[in-house]
Image (cartoon, rainbow over all chains, first blue to last red; front, side, top):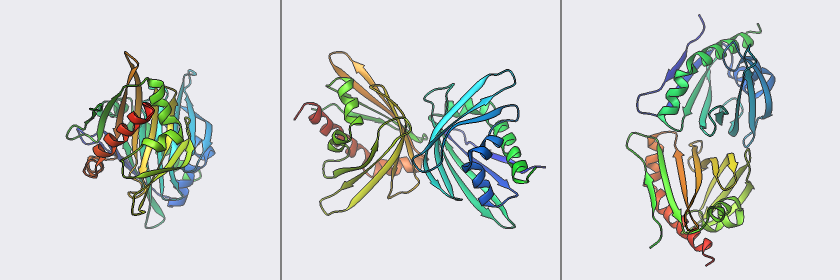
Length: 158
Length: 158
């Protein structure tokens, strides 16, 4: 059994609080968010292949990546890094270019746990409840669960 | 009488919808958001003096500015520009460094109105209702009203 993703999106709010534990130290989990070659290996669901097309990982920088399915459909994403604090915090925007200008803002905290474990806590704020509901309907939980399972495998060196 | 600022922050939401009309064309209002020398002349309440310390106005760029009061107290702000579309749209983050890591996200649309007038429509999303309430208690409406009155004066060439 892998560690579960916990997504808490209380009715009436337009944000989700997401947490996920890892059987790996905080530094390794942060590095998998910081390094584009590692990031491309785990982000998103299993049936999509990632290509990072822009990567400038620093406060004031930005990123872009594409996900491609077996049929060749391409889904593109981009954002800016408002804040990057090593091993502690990433605050970044996120936009799926298929729904242009519906930008969300993630504050991702990295917490150290005993026994070389760690926890990621993401406060993910959407422009409205409707946008959040659309994300949930479109499989946000599956995409995150499968992504973090791939991250588990990457961290375990598999 | 100047044009009013309308701030709509429905109970239970963590965002505010702000609109303000201007007796000036959309291009002039956008330019006052794009040019750091113009921006410094109008942003914020009347009793504070602005200094722009960083300005890179483009999608993926960023900004920083400081506001100084008569006693020499300095209030610093910074953010990143997620999207800039000339005369149409700015999507940007906003952080007051006195409340670090409480980042909001503004989607500012510029609309043309008849007779050389225009309207600014800002969807301003906060990390939580508590942060939005704090902003309102700390004089968000006064700061915006006075700022847009200064912008009126700037646009009128006074």
